Image 1 (cartoon, rainbow, N blue to C red):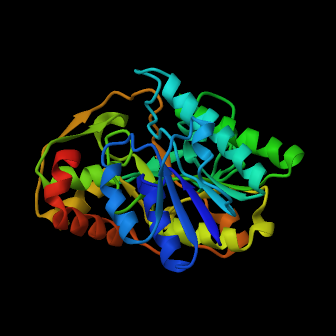
Image 2 (tube, rainbow, N blue to C red):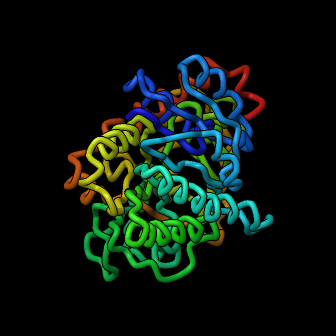
Length: 354
C-alpha cells in the first residue's frame, strides 16, 4: 500500500476512499486525481489537503495528465460520468471519452507500472428491459422480488452476475460494460491485475446528489429545505426499490481486495446493500420525514421513463463467499448520517443541493 492512485479522487466515492485509505495507511502516498468537473467536488479539496492526500488536477481523458503521477502500486478507478441519462439528451462525447477512453488510459497506466486496479462498475450494466421482466409482487410500501423466476441470475436475494446481458441498458451502462470487456482482454493478454465491482446505489455524506444520480442525498436535501419531489413511473406510487450501500462499507471491501489481490484477480462481483439495506422511494420518504420532521409535496407521475427500473437489489452471495464481506450500515444509520451532515454544513451545501 505504498502508492495508491484514486482516479476521480474528488468525487463522492473517490474522495471518501482517499480519506479512508489515508487513515488506514498513514505512511502511504495517496493521490487524488480529478478534473473537478462535477459541481461540489471542489469542496473536497480542503478535506483532502488536511488529511495529507496529494491532489493532481488531471483529466482521465488525457493520457499526458498521468505523466506527473509517478509510480503507483494500486489504482482505484472511480472516475465516471455517472448519470443514467448522460448522452441521451446531451452530447455523447464527454460520456464516452470519460467512461471508456478514460478507462483505457487507466489500464495502460496500470500495465506500465504493474499496478493492481480496482474498477468500480455499476449495476446499470444489466439491461433495463430484462430487469422489468423480473417476477414481482407488491405490498403497501414497495415492490418485492418473487422467489420463482423464469430469468436466470435472479432470486429473492436479488440480482447475481449470472443475470443475462442481452438488451439495451443506457449509454452510461454500455460504457461501463465495454470497459469491463476491455479489462478481461488486458488481463488475458497484457498481464493486468484487476477486479471489477458492479456497485449498486452508493451513498453517504459528501455526495452532491442529483435526480439522476445520488437520489438518496437528494431526497433528504429536498425534505430538509422543504422542496417538492415526484414519484416517477410505475403508477406514481413510489414503490420502486433499490438497495443502498454506505461508502465506508465499499471501502471495507476494496481494502480487503487490495490486501488479497491474488484471490480476486480477474473476478467480477455484484456489490450492494442487499435485501437488508434496500428501500423504496415510499419508504425513503417516511425515513426523511421522521428525521427532518418536514412533510413535503410529492407529486405522482405515472408514466415510465426509458431506462427506469422497477426493482433492483444486489445479490451479494458471490462476493460474501469469496471475501467474507457483508455490509454493516443499515438504511436508518445511512439516512441519519446524511441528515446530520446536511444540518452541519447547510450553508455551503444549500447552493448545490437545494
